[in-house]
Image (cartoon, rainbow, N blue to C red; front, side, top):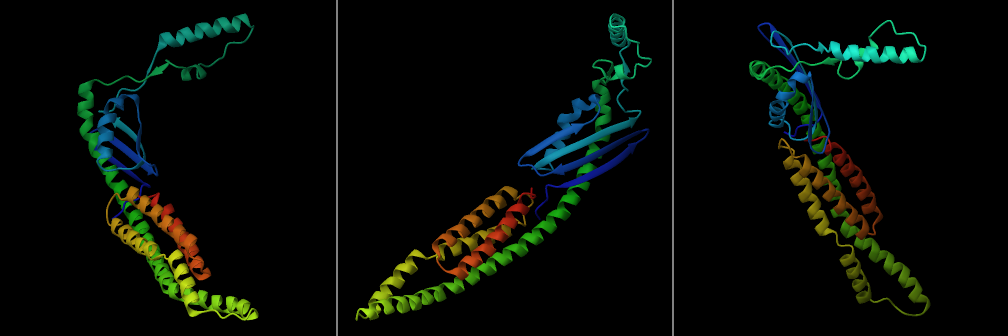
Length: 293
């Protein structure tokens, strides 16, 4: 079944004295875009984590938050005392020149660049922590997939119902075509007949038949109706696949194009109303498709 691009997943895994927590959020995006929020020490694992995500997610903006606590956690941030002393010396000089009182706290200075730095873990430490991180990421992706699949099933059901409505409108238009030609024939005979009657001229059946034939040729929408039904059939078939988003988007555009062509070719009011209803449903399909992977 089609998967939604929207969802979230979370997992917490404990291994001995260490615990890893992963949270994943995914929203609509034309391509796959991955970002990782974690301590600086995990930057070396980002490529492996992204590869794991790409095996499960094909489209969407994926944001992951990762944290590890316990024995395997990267070293905590360290204070660069020499850098802090340099900032304090500059601050003292500045306050002295401008006759200002020195601040009683260094809290504000701790936010300056270079004061607090992440201590990068050794490569062997990353090798030890990767199995725990990999397992947690996998479980979080499982939870994400479950939510995306549930929402995808709901979207697919709604889109199938909308496809059924479009198919019913196509049948209505096809049924209306013969009546449209008959209505045009009747109006032609009435209007032209009145004009010619005043001049003592009769309207021949051949003239009427020729005019109706011309209208039938100009307003022939049989090809467009066949393509609409074909596109709807393909649309419903693709809903059974896991990542049909791009193909569904293309078909929705083609459905809209065929509906516009019918509207431009047919002079019938009833058909025009049916096309308006159809375009409303096609636009709804296009909106829902934007959320399908």
